[in-house]
Image 1 (cartoon, chains in turn red, cyan):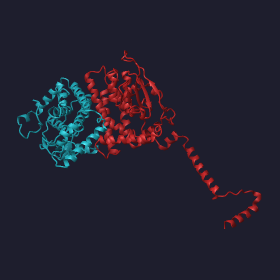
Image 2 (cartoon, rainbow over the protein chains, first blue to last red):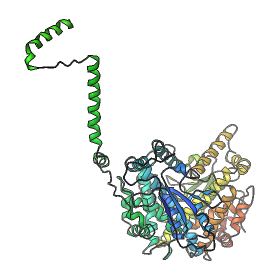
Image 3 (cartoon, chains in turn purple, blue):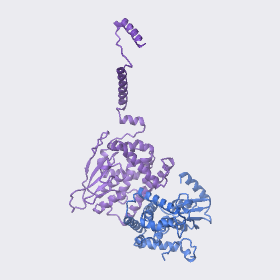
Length: 348
Length: 274
């Protein structure tokens, strides 16, 4: 299926980014590098999806040479879901934890220098992230009505190729809502004030705990980044960079400066190209303003379509005789009166 | 519980001291209770004993339905009913009893993180093994779960619960894991706990905290429960400091039950670790 370029100025169907870093396994023959399929990036991020960000960050930390395919169509990946790592002969691996395990097996290990206790802490803090922070993130990006309609659904509808863009955003939304319902064990869960409060409270607690654990260090375990840094970055960076109308969770994050600095530091060090290529997205604060900025031709299109419709109706009316046009010449005033009389008689 | 309700409960809780007739409800010990429920119940009992709060254990067949959140165990204190370890810890904190006051911020962050690890990995693994592994589900779990009920209700309830748990496993991505992978995850979790514990008596050195109670509840139950295979308990036994940790807590907090052991013994579910 051919990918159709979308209307925004810098969206391309695919871009290949070859990541060459110092390979730890220098003796290996680099026959075909491993290929990573992930969601396209935007807002100054290498990818808009949390799992993809985690995997990309870990790959950079570990120095793994990956050929990264940035996609907007999950069906193009080998397993149908993103992120997916296509290995050199062992098939495809798709969840972030499994991908990281595979990279470690291939000797690209960012946790090499960690002590056993730090490895244990990594497991514990990743569990904390998944249980406390992730539900709130999913809620704020996908379930909160304003954010979903104005930002998330719009981004996916614009970037995913036709005709999948009519189907995919709603399906992803339903999937995430269903998952939240199952995890909270409440089949009738609906987005609302109370649920939002509970989720955001837990998320705030989690972010505060992370902030306390990070302290003033550059990374969670000393001077070089590890898997935990990748996970935290993957979860917090979208919150930092994507401008949402309902900003409560983002405000919580902005009160924790060391976490903010942590994310921007990683972006600057490991993903400098994304920052330069970041387009300026105007946050759609008002629906009308947003529309006008996004589609300057909308008003023109509206006017033209109304004129066209009126012209078509008029033409039809004339052709079928509902309306007749009489040519009015000044020197034929008397005969015109006669014509009118005649017509009046004819009509009778 | 919503935040407003929580604040309200805390206020009421703070008003009265801990009564003598506090009761903890769990499913029937001999015939009905499952591994995961027993672990949660033991964790709560251990926590209350560590706080020095007396509680009476009462076994009811419909404990799950009596509970306000649908989960066991739950405690009935005064005129309030609180279920699950997290809310119970907050409840006792409102009454002025807390084990984690002496921790600094970083330690508290670690404690919360490790508690999530246990919930995320150990509890989920227990649920998986009970309900998603066909052998265990058919031989042990379904029969135990529905033992108080007569036909056809026992079949209906058992299959309903199994379907519910399987859907949840699907949602969190555990459905695709095989049994071997689940055992691996349990091993990993135990090693992480073992690393964190090290040679200390408790996770945060001298004083026990709710993390110790939670870990004890789960590990002790797994070690003393007979399943279709011994794989799970073997994995835990491979970490010797966890084994001695469980023994130590059993000796310290559940010692008096050994002396007065009778047919109606309060907690012991089966063989002990002595």
